Length: 215
DNA sequence: AGGAAGATCCGCT
DNA sequence: GCGGATCTTCCTG
Image (cartoon, rainbow, N blue to C red; front, side, top):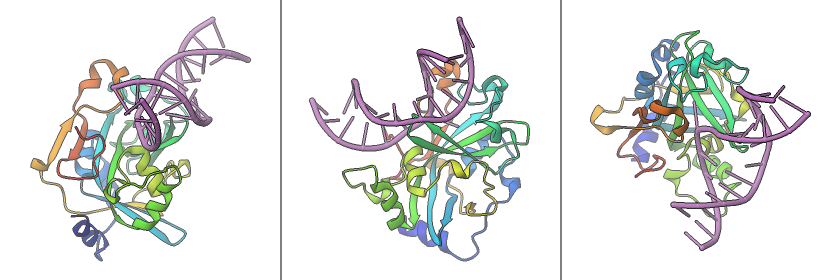
């Protein structure tokens, strides 16, 4: 399974998704991003993974979003800009999280990338993840969880605002995931969001071994 | 100026 | 299942 994904991702002709791909609401983008491939090149080394878990955060009307009620701050400024850029923020004093800005400029929506299936640069990913662990992790779980994903892919605050349609970190097109393989459940860790906490805006590929917090 | 809470992970029980 | 690690961001006074 992982081998098959790797073969397709490294195939010549896989192009970065154009900006127009991102110009839709965050829920639709969260769905469309499943199966696509995040690639990060740094210092001549490449790591890549297939997106298998996402969460949609829908701007002013979503109490779970950083931009709830139209809140605009220095931290979430990127969410207000054009789609197709990375919104990277720091949480819990130790972790980074990577989002993809959705919708159109002035409409602050984003998709949190929660898990990838590692498909290229396994040694590099394992090396990055080893730093804060005592016990080894199975390959399929190296990028399982939003903070694990950032750690393993080498994503930090320096990538906040990065253009994902070009540059050192991009998202490549890849075959879509069939609808019958996608599950929709409530988002993780948003109990503070009242009624919005139960919206089924966490999407994942149900047969992927890399999904975080499987029931 | 101060404090509370957070879109989490890890290791131990 | 639970709590500790660790610090930025934002809101309050």
